[in-house]
Structures are given as structure tokens and as C-alpha cells.
Image (cartoon, rainbow, N blue to C red):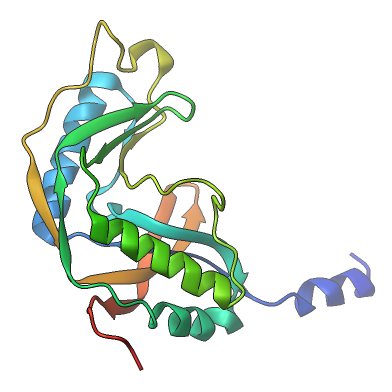
Length: 198
């Protein structure tokens, strides 16, 4: 490698792969983890590890580490009161072989949180993944479901007993990719509150 190319590589700013999410309590994570395990047993694929289960609000991908404080400042302006979501259905997306859990009736507060957060990030100059697409709240339970064993009319998804996921905060998460998959670390928390932030 030439000295010029080496200097270019060294001068690249350090980046962090990040996203905002709702993070479940241990009890909710266990419940979702059990559903994921059972679904993977039935349909194949790779069940999401219990410690990584979450609901993504906004995915940003790689951003310069130096901009992380700006990201936190933008998120701190979001004001939505604590809310609960009712996890009551499973779904399957055939285009990416992904099995998920979600709500038959989306919570208005969840939509408000996603919308406010995305607007705050855009005002701060950040680009959110999936811009222009409707927010589709879901919890990924099983990835890489094989086509031959995927849910179908003949072998439909099971119904699940509904349960409540209460939320009083959202989080900023750093994702690290490796051969073993993604590992996540919460790097900032933002309490939900109906009051205007200062």
C-alpha cells in the first residue's frame, strides 16, 4: 500500500453503525424469545437472540462517531408520553424471508414517536434508512426462513396469545457486525414524556 493511500485510510473518521429502538423489559424479551424459538423450530431459519430483541424506530447506519452527541441532542427533543403496545400477531415477509411479531392495531403513540424522531433527525441533518416508506413497526423474530418451509396457505403462522409491552423510554443502539451476527450496545436512553423538552 502506498504512503498516500495509507494516509487516506488513516484520515477517514471513525464511524458507528447506529439505530433508535424500543428495548423490551427482560420479561417481554423472554416472551418474544420463546415465540422466536418455537417459530424457528416450526419453519426453520435463525431465531433472534433474546438479548438482541427490539423494535426499530429509525435506522441510520454508519455515521461519524463525532456526530453521536448531535444525534442524542436531536432525539432529546422528542416528547411522547409513555405508552403500551399490544403484541398480538405474527407475520412473514417472503421478500426477505423474515418472520416478525407486531400489532394488529398500531398504537397511535408509537406512530407519533417514530414520526417525531424522524423529523428531529432530519432537521439535524441525518438521513434515516427507508426514507419515503411508511413506518412498519415489527419485532424481527426469525431471519433466513427457508422458502421450502416458509409459512404458506397450507402451513400458516400460528396465532399467539396477546400480551402488553409497556414503554417508558427509547434508546440509541450501536451495532457491531461479526461472523457470529450482530451484537448491540445501548449507548443512550431517552425517557418518554409528554412535556416539551428544554
